[in-house]
Image (cartoon, rainbow, N blue to C red; front, side, top):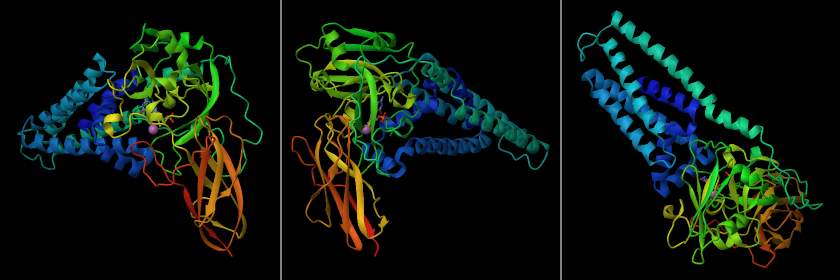
Length: 496
Ligand SMILES: Nc1nc2c(c(=O)[nH]1)N[C@H]1C(S)=C(S)[C@@H](COP(=O)(O)O)O[C@H]1N2
Ligand SMILES: [Mo]
């Protein structure tokens, strides 16, 4: 209860002032950055996108166990438990100091939490053993006083904890700014969606992913909350002149809107860490042209407010593709968890090397001189998206009636486009599916194929070929270090 009181009090202050001050978030962030890649992969495979919740729960359990031990220690020996709490404070302080967005206010909070914790701990233990620490007060009035104080503290922690989880004051302010924001009309609108691009087959991933359903992947334990009115983007490094941009400056540029399908390098074959949205933004190459990259530069290290970095080849950001400083997603300002106010979107590259959310800096540099967040953690410094395809219907393991079975799904080869999708049953010959027109070569395509199947168990595989004739790789490889390969394979049970 003492530890809970200290923590909840400091988290309440962080919640009201700015969530970026949270000691728990700093501690979790330090854990995320420090754990070896193997442990992280294991946690993600176990908890999926609930990994952040699992980490917070684990931290809470760990702190509770240590705090319980500190309580017993304090009862045995005066100030022994308090010393444990002081160590808590120092650990929290250390975590805060390792964070990218460390501020003076953030430094005060872990110390405050430890101080409050120690005060409550001493008071509780004194109630339990008032005469001489180390004795037992027995079932007398002192013990009753202890339980009263304990109950009162527990109630406070519960109420405070509920307030902390529900009310994110700092975020509420920015949510209001976001809600009232009017995005400009694009100078160049998104090309219209071709007729027939959406095959309208129930169960196939939607052609354009609604924002609430869009996958979310990042290292941020609590969503960074950036006020667009204070946001600045700096272009630094190997440039003729450094450039600084405000959100207002950015909105005043000729914006374009494009559909782009982004994918996570951690997307297993057949997985759902991929989504297609209509992004509104300003081409990155225009900003880079203002800064003037020096001739020896070959990489742009994009950085977010929380210190995450991605290494994108300079070439990809200056060629004619629509790499964007995105401010809008499907007609609204970026949702906070998708990078408000500004993120990068680069057709053809996995998110970890391109799609920096909560963007604050573009450092023009060289692959030889700088490494991005994931590079020392076992992932490639470059990450072009691999050609891939997925069967969405029927679901793997489904039972279907005999006769014509309709298969449907998606395929993608960003910035090249899909030329062909084929299916094969039980390792037989490849049969071409009907390929719907793509919105553009930067998005996924839907496909479908009806097949007559004999009763029994069947294995169905899908394979895509891009518009240059390159086939999706058959060899089964897992996601690390640069994206999964292999054919998505499902089993269906055809009824008699
Ligand atoms: N600031 C920041 N940006 C980030 C990341 C991150 O951890 N931090 N993760 C990247 C990864 S790995 C992916 S796949 C995409 C996911 O974007 P989404 O969450 O909007 O789908 O964001 C990228 N941008
Ligand atoms: Mo990712």
